[in-house]
Image (cartoon, rainbow, N blue to C red; front, side, top):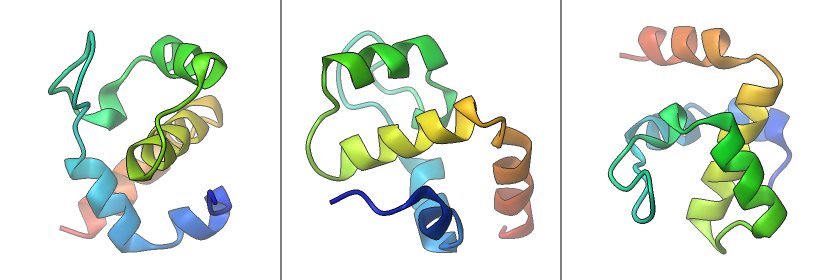
Length: 81
C-alpha cells in the first residue's frame, strides 16, 4: 500500500532515503531517482511501477516533479544535512 504523499513528505527519513536511492536497472541505471526525467517516470506509471519500495519511491519522485515540489524537497534535504 502506498502511503499518501503528504504523510511521506513529512517524514525526513523517507526524504533522506529518497536522496540516496538510485535506479537499479534500465536506461538510467545508477542515476539518483530524484534526477530521473518526468517523462520516464510517467512512462513507468503507465506501464506499471515496480513493486515494493522502488515503486513507492518512483511514485513519490513523480509526485514531487508533477507538483513542482523540487525546490521544497531540495531545501528540506539541505536543512537536514
